[in-house]
Length: 307
Image (tube, rainbow, N blue to C red; front, side):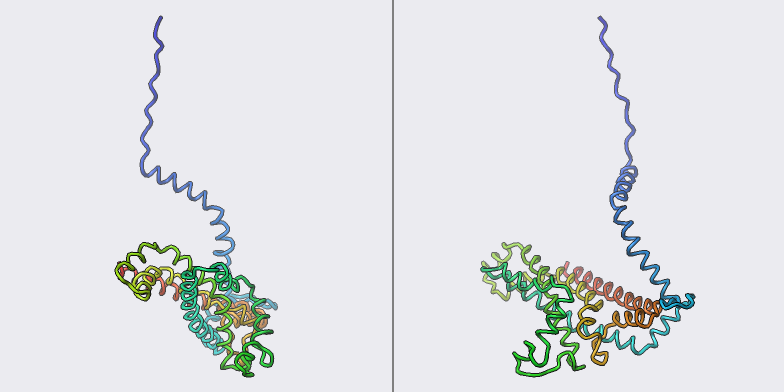
């Protein structure tokens, strides 16, 4: 009986590193294709279309839609109302960012070190952030700021027009915004605090470190990246402020609180000049990009210095 012969398997050509990389690239592109499609349709294309509109004289009330180049930008840079609105936006950003970062850190440290009813404190600090802007506006307009029966004047024993005085209106909007949105920064800081290893504090306690030394030498340095992220996010959010100011003061009194987004809204939908309004929003867009890149550059230099 003759033994059956078994055919040897054919030798396969080795797969090169370039082929593996190309295959992974193809799979990755297929995986992110749905997101890329949505990103292009709903973000990239509207951005390009908006920039084209800023170079035109488009008007929703009718008229000729002609390309005017950078004439809208030239008009915006010579518009004192635009500069006043931009100044209001910058003032609001500075006044709101500092307390939102410091209070978020302080509340997170407080709750992290409490040993009782932590869920109640978390809900108390984060709860207002879940409310929509319309609810916040009604709450503060009807209960906190009224001069005759408002909670703030009742507590202080005064009859101040918090939203009617041009010198106090911006501060009042900052107070409302801090109370409303500090919960987001608080939550980020709290999550970062809970990720710090406990053995670092135990080792510091063995060496006789005080609570202040632990905070200064362990907690704050390890929260550096979280602080940088919070500062960037807070700057971006404050530069884009619109909802609460529009609902509570409508930019008043005497345009003392009107941000640049509200001015663009008025120009576009009250003055019907969509092209000019688009140019104003792209000026703000460039400012936001500059602030973001500058902040990220500072954070990168800080990390390089620490390393």
